Amino acid sequence: QVLLVESGGGLVQAGGSLRLSCAASGRTFSWYLMAWFRQPPGKVRQFVASIIWSGGSTQYADAVKGRFTISRDNAKNTAYLQMNSLKPEDTAVYYCATALAAGGYDYWGQGTQVTVSS
Image (cartoon, rainbow, N blue to C red; front, side):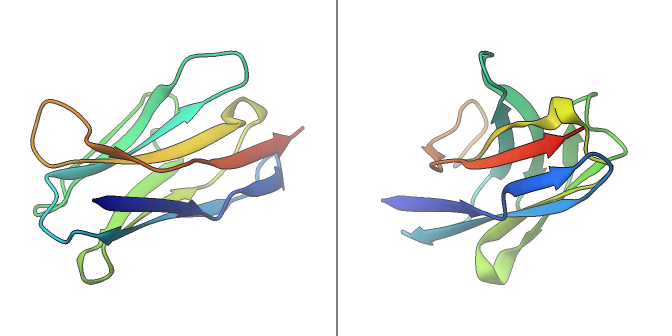
């Protein structure tokens, strides 16, 4: 079993920054990738960013390109999401997820709330 715990959410003014962390514990092995998703109020969950665990290759949703950066610390089994130039439309519950192989996500965190005020 794997446990993912997000932290770092909070309330920030537009234009501000936050860094989210996703710490993995439990069964240890090499992930294929880790990703961040978000679910704005009243909307479906959206892909935000992903990182291939071994090579570090990244992907981003168009809405966050140039503002958000995903990274990981292999030794700590932790992924990060640095969020800069935040906008009110970034308000959402942010979730991390991990995949053991391509094709789907196996584990999800409980989410952390990010609220951006205008």
